[in-house]
Figure 1 (tube, rainbow, N blue to C red):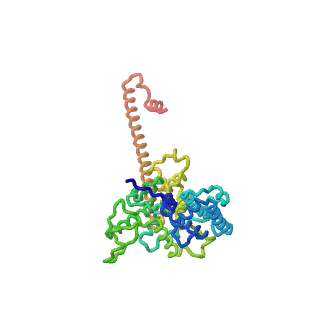
Figure 2 (figure 1 turned 30 degrees about the horizontal axis):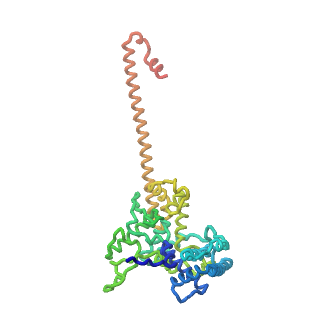
Figure 3 (figure 1 turned 180 degrees about the vertical axis):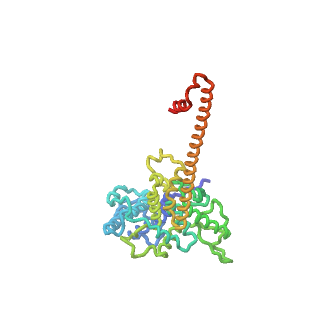
Length: 412
């Protein structure tokens, strides 16, 4: 007996086409705003609303088109009044477009995108200062320093936490420092590797060791970030032995709490519905800026941030060791903790002193070798003169030549 194949609805196809959990959250929230604006069954679930819109839009594409235009025109007016940016307007269109594609709604995208204002190539914001990042990292949660130091020293996106397991972080010893190589988006088509600073690896290692000491079995498959557990006896939920992964949305919420609790973000700082710097992406901008200041090659920075380098993707072949050497240039500027900065500077001074010692010793050895060579030459010359004088004395024809004349002649 053959099983009947159940036809997938538009909402199921929509979810299938969204790659990450964080993007899924964004898309569903924006679709809700759209449905609320056009007053489409506010009492129903988001899935039911998506399926109804897709079914009706497939039958009557002009109905779907007119509702989309009404909604986007409203958001366009908000852009003109400075309430939102043109980039935000474009982000409202993305989930609606994907829903139309998932539900086979016959709408020509160009009929809509022609009227959208151009998006600026860069946001009018700034990177956080090192003082602001330090304040965030001081939020009283055991995980916070590990999160902030890792993001600041690697430039990873917030979504990377959904993939990161302990086995994806491999320590690298360099001089007196132990940093780490980190695999980002492991198993995904966008997988790449980057490096994290010694202080970031140290905080991650302390966090994992604390979990191990508390009773969790730590393996290479353990999620790097997990929910906190209930330490009270007799509790059945929130156990240390049953880890629950802290997803990227949880990490985002943790950073948001830190921003407000640590007085880094205030309502008075808002400008045009935006703050001076983005909570999570701001650290990515901070990373790139610091690496540029440190003198790293721009193409290497892009590689370590997981960016495409265009046609160079096919031709630029730098080794891991070469990338690490370039990354090490930025360690001082990427360090958040003052003690870590001082330690790195001390190691650098020790390295320079060692190099200077080798240089001085090399120069002294070179001079010593030169002196020994001159002494050897003088000894050979004296031996030659002695043999010559002996030859003169034994030869009657040369006996009348005075020694000082012969010596002067040889010397000239």
